[in-house]
Image 1 (cartoon, rainbow, N blue to C red):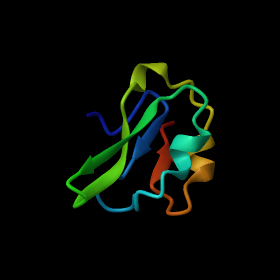
Image 2: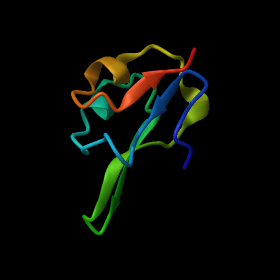
Image 3: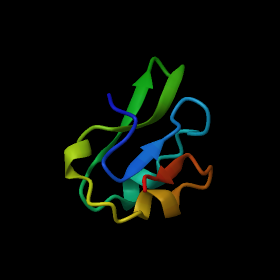
Length: 70
């Protein structure tokens, strides 16, 4: 799975804490959950081509795992 879209990148392995706040805020269902046996959990871009760059994931993440791509 990609760790970025045209507009947003995620540091899934170091900053994402699998709180899923970003998934609830995404209006285009771009984000999904990675949950392998409960040991490896983080958000993923399951449909990166649908990202419109609204920034709602960036604002929703309390762990600052997302960053805008300029």
